Each structure stands twice: as C-alpha cells, then as structure tokens.
Image (cartoon, rainbow, N blue to C red):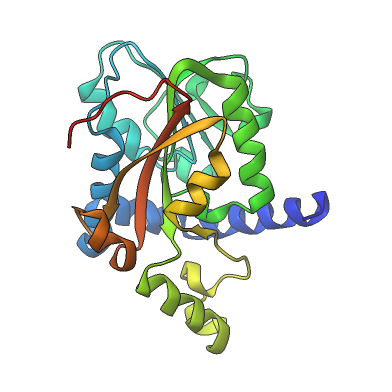
Length: 243
C-alpha cells in the first residue's frame, strides 16, 4: 500500500470513530450489554496474570479509556500513556492531558520510552498489513527486554467473521453505514497461525485466549470465537503461565 493510500485509510478510520465516538464510548461504558460483555471479557483476558505495579504502560488505540479504567485499581504507581486517532474518544478518557496523544504513536512525544507493556485492544482490525509492520518495528525499538505486547486479533477462521465478509461482498454497505461492516475500509483478520508466522522469529507468541464472549478453550474457539488475545515478547523472555 502506498503512503498516500495508507494516509487515506487512516483518515477514513479516524472519521469513522469521530463520527460515532460518543455512541461507541456509551456502548463500551455499559449502555449496550450485548456490546459491553465481550469487550469486557477481552480486557480481562488481556490483563490476566500480569503484574502492572510500577510498570510503564502504553495503550495504543486507547479510545475512551476502558483499559485505563480497568488497570488503575490493580496497579500501584503504574506509568500509563494513551494514544488514539479519535479526538472524540480521547475527550472521554480520564487520563491527564499530558499522558494522552492524539495521532499515530510514531509521532508521539513520548516515543523515547521503553515500555513494560504495550496494549492494542480492538486496534489491529483497523490497521493495514503495512501499518501493522510499522507497529512491529516500533515494538522492537520500544519494548523493554522483558516486556510484553498484548493485542486482540479478529479471528479470520471464525464462522461469524466469514459471514461478515460475505455480507460486505454481496449486500450494499449503505445498509450498514453506521457499523464497521458498512465502512469503505476493510478490516484486518488473521488466524493464530498467521500471527505466529508474522511475529516470528524475533518474538515468541503466547495465546492468552479465544473470546466468545468469555474466554473459551482453543479447540472450540478456533471456529467459533470472533476474536482472540495474544501476548508476545522477545524470544526466551516469555513468562510461564499456568492455565
């Protein structure tokens, strides 16, 4: 994808979330239980079994601050920073202004940090492959030696995702204009095997769980869960996790 097309895609995603930011923040905040429940489940999966005390945390695609609201009570002295493209969503974020950045992480003033944890929750779906590659380069440069990147991925193998793709292909998008399925930009979906291949050999990938809408076993989640959460770190630094 050319730089011009990448910029156009980023502008489309930004406009989409600015246009529905208030409604999105309300849904995530609990007004829509059908939306809230799986969103909360993937957050719980993302922070499960990690120690955030005194950690340097970067939240890319922080939105209205759901991760911040979740980790604040469970972390002592954590150094949290947020980044998002949507001004509407960031206005709802409770972090102080000096810890929020409107725009791409590559242009953020805190780019010199080395992070213990980098989160991308509900973000990868809105990236292009080229943009994801740029983020991987950022992780390589800005992740602490024993740090972790934790992200959620749309599961391309799930039946629901396959049906959604068929819907986008054959049904006019104008019918779903207010939904992601009706937007002009495509969404990025991957299988767990594709994630392992993309992040290797530099990183070691660990599957934290499939979400449908709670965390479910992998053998069931592969075809039924529309999303899964992974963590990865530099090779030989992955902590032992007991399921």
